[in-house]
Image 1 (cartoon, rainbow, N blue to C red):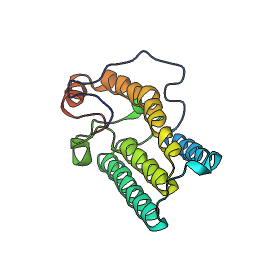
Image 2: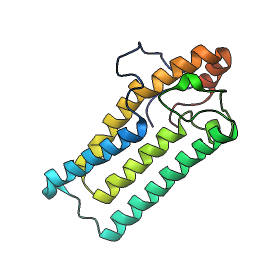
Image 3: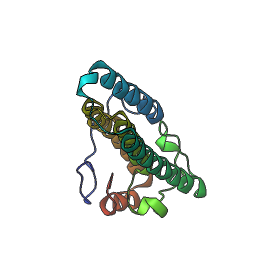
Image 4: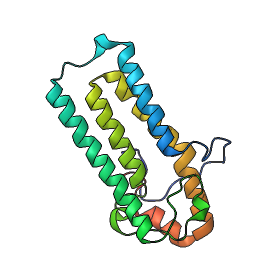
Length: 168
């Protein structure tokens, strides 16, 4: 997905927008924008059969939800917080399960869920919302989380950043 390598991540400077918008709310806003874009220019919609649009949308949506729940379950098993607004409350760095493959499975799952919604809408304008969603999430949620976790856990977290990609 989004380009970062295994060398870790650049730590951006703090912003007043950091950690202000809960990611679940951001998903709802993006989904609304996608639906609005599709309704604004219906003539641009793709001519997919309802079976294809529904099947692809539901399949991607279920995959996204499964990935989100996998991330949440791993955090719960390790007794650490799932609150994205307060990463400093984390109790430990989770490196097992799905966290061996992606540092942000919950955000990856949310992105797949929105991709499923875009497939169901079968409209190219709906797809244009996804890069904006990912860019906002990366800049104002993920990078501030990484700063907070790096400050709290030091070198073990920095090693994790070098070993596991941010998205995939």
